[in-house]
Image 1 (cartoon, rainbow, N blue to C red):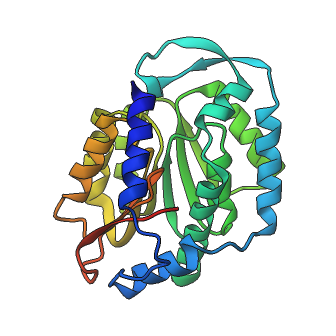
Image 2: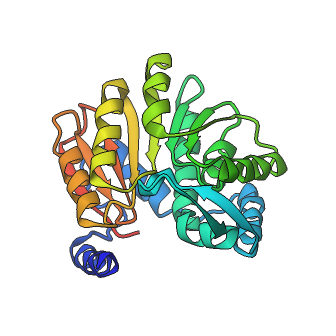
Length: 266
């Protein structure tokens, strides 16, 4: 049933989304993000190394014990690394989009970015965000110790040293992290894909956003519950604009932006 919902959501999105290269987006900054980043087809050398790690994971049929807190079951089971990679890793083009956003914001920020990721998985998306600028600080949370160990091994092979990994339940770890940090420049939510969890994370993190912050939510069309959460988030008075890219949604808070929500093909 969930697969059918996602398929029908994609058809609706395709028929209603824009593919204008930025035309019609009134805020100059958001226009630039679409024109220069969303449709940028330049590749970066580090991408080859990260994708090599992805291919190794996709071909690794070793079984590991996983405690998958993201499903809400909180029960360990045996899973193949290749299956985890196939089901949970962000698509290359979406992860590379995150890389470009982080790189752009790093170049235009006067100090290193403070980036939070909820849902590390095997660490490929984390690697893309960390590789954009070694001065940035990436904080990421993974529920399974076994998966976290594989992610750390990937980062070691990629020589990424700006990642701070926490292992455990997000509901336990995130409140403590919030107390330690005054704000977040980028938040990427790719964890428990349910309405309740997504709204809970949003409510916890929203008070710590800045005007220039970007909150990114993965799989906003994965289910009715996720799309309901997305609609509630972008309806909040603090949100000025948003991009719905189908696979993920970006939320902006800058009061200088014209309040509008865009559906974009990507």
